[in-house]
Image (cartoon, rainbow, N blue to C red):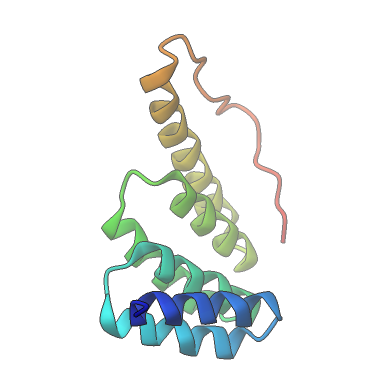
Length: 127
């Protein structure tokens, strides 16, 4: 028998793929009722919230992901995108820089000669 939280997560992904973001969030919430600290599902909720233009909610949700996985560069990249969409460019640039730094630190584990990220350039705003 399939794990109910996984069933809801997969149903949410299907709804998301069909552009049914409210329905996706509803399914993700069912998964989170069973596993409230599941970072991948929380991230999916944040992305769906952002797709619906609910950027304040998306930022709050992704900040929960960051609390759970503070070394995850993808979470900081998502935060950067959501902040850009709010027009908070300096904050978005800071989150993007954090993502690049975390990614570099992860790269150093397998490639000790990896060059540091270029922090001198401005971030491209993708609103």
